[in-house]
Picture 1: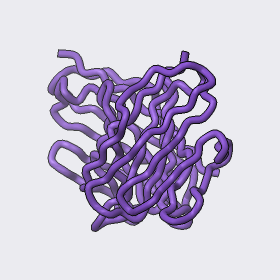
Picture 2 (picture 1 turned 180 degrees about the vertical axis):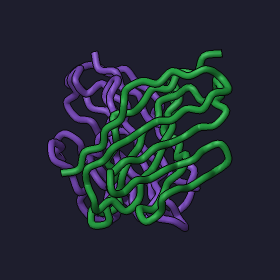
Picture 3 (picture 1 turned 90 degrees about the horizontal axis):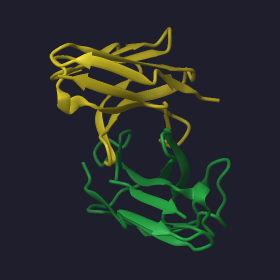
Picture 4 (picture 1 turned 45 degrees about the horizontal axis):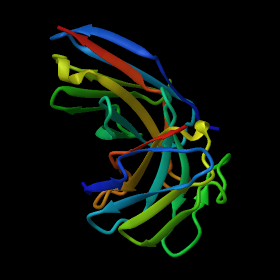
Length: 115
Length: 112
């Protein structure tokens, strides 16, 4: 399986500010995804990060609020823009398996608290 | 649309077997997964099963799939206190680009 790291691991931010979360994989992967896990909830897919083109967003998520970059096959960023307390969540990136792309492996997550 | 449901909570004694259940609605699911999330940690892929299989066993873990009833279960034999975590089932659909749909998670508490 791929080794996935995220930065920062946690942060406390003021409302109205923006935070960029980085996801780094130790090998090239085809698919990278960003999920949100609100407190006590399950995971919800935000978007698929496409290399070399705009991300594909799920219903309820828009590019202005969650801009995503994917400059290459090992790295992606998710920005949470103009934050409000409702954005307090764990944000996780995931990647498809290498030999078996139907699996997905998750990063450790970024815990965000917005005051 | 797809919908994956799990019971919220399960409590067992150490050494007993745990069975965590999951139901899904989309009959075009290709793979079904079980993930484990320990407190303060990310998701760990435990096991997965292809939709044309009925059962998969991996050490203490047994996955049963009833495709007719759209029911998936995870049995943990000889449950240990280190198994205490939240367990998520998830499904992927062949025409949805590997997107996973997650259940709400089942919190497993193992009592000594």
